[in-house]
Length: 360
Ligand code: SF4
Image 1 (cartoon, helix red, strand yellow):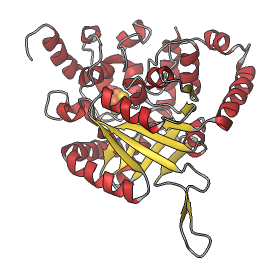
Image 2 (cartoon, protein in one colour; image 1 turned 180 degrees about the vertical axis):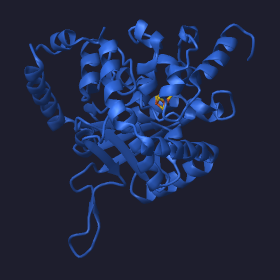
Image 3 (cartoon, rainbow, N blue to C red; image 1 turned 60 degrees about the horizontal axis):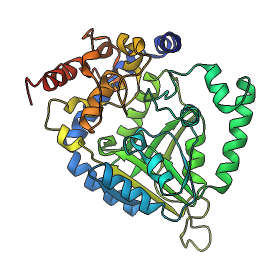
Image 4 (tube, rainbow, N blue to C red; image 1 turned 135 degrees about the horizontal axis):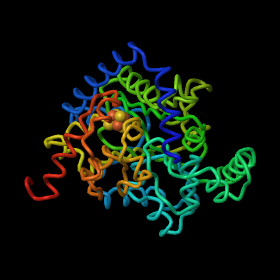
């Protein structure tokens, strides 16, 4: 099974990386997330002011309908939009919304591109094509092996990048002092966020933390928990491209996009802060718990409409999508694996009670 192989590889990698220092850092990150979620209104206000000062346009959306409208308005005059990986973009069903309006949309993350070609959906937070065998991926891209795949994807996406007038990215963390943190290995997110004329970063409000140094700590926990000593790229974007080279006069949009907007999505997150599902907002989306879950493996990751697995079931509930909490066996493997020790089975127990009408 594909997932079994991925789980074995990740476990081996994590064992080499996760040491006492990591666990101390993870405890720190848990405190950072608790503090940030507790003070979220204040941090949203601070982030908005600082991001606008840095040259970003900032938008808010309460739900999917509002989110789609913001994105469609922003890209109204764009003909080709390229996307880096973003689960929030799937939460907003952006590909369909943009394509229905006549915009060409291309995923640039390899796993997301394969999924797009197969008309499928992501089934893991960091490895969207986790359920797809190499042969299926080759077939979808019309190639025979990994070498051909690399050449084909590079050529196809460079052609698309050359004509793209829009770019969409997600963000792993946002610091309230106005910086976006995007962790990646492929290098596509930096191209998508730098080359097109207009770029929009779509993300959930819960990604905001109090400071730049906190955002660096959260980022480190994410990539290490996902099995990397360090990612190939940590993109930190703190404003739009500018130059003060001539007479120290600032000109904006020189090499990078002339407009970079940020969409902060609520879609149930603020309400979840006052519920039994608050702990889910601490999730940094490293995806490690999904690998540890026996049900997720047995289901070939086919558990949940937008977000997958146990934590995905909670996220689907928060954001108004479908999942079956009864797949959870309550074994607790996810809590053991989670760097923030988020008690997913306990939230799923509550979700089961809601489903059978025992509690509201
Ligand atoms: S619940 Fe924990 S292990 Fe799972 S994705 Fe979130 S932070 Fe990572």
